[in-house]
Length: 66
Image 1 (cartoon, rainbow, N blue to C red):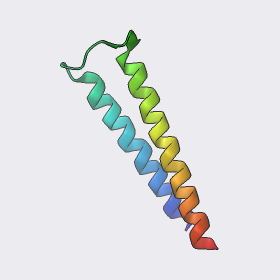
Image 2 (cartoon, rainbow, N blue to C red; image 1 turned 60 degrees about the horizontal axis):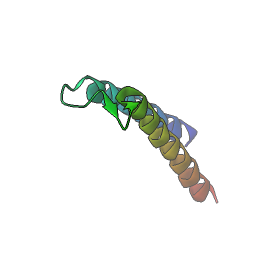
Image 3 (tube, rainbow, N blue to C red; image 1 turned 120 degrees about the vertical axis):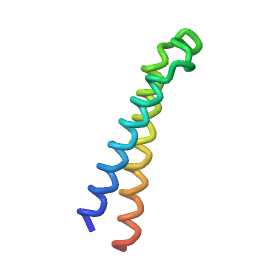
């Protein structure tokens, strides 16, 4: 069961890293959004999504073990 959670987190992290790299290199995305660097905003969004996925898998595994 623990191995399954690790696989989910690994795949989520890998997918988010690839998604960030692809979005960061797209030519039609502006350099800044509301005077913030777009790559930093994308990093923050990817980090928040990863944290949400980590909490979701932890909560899901806690419910199944009860």
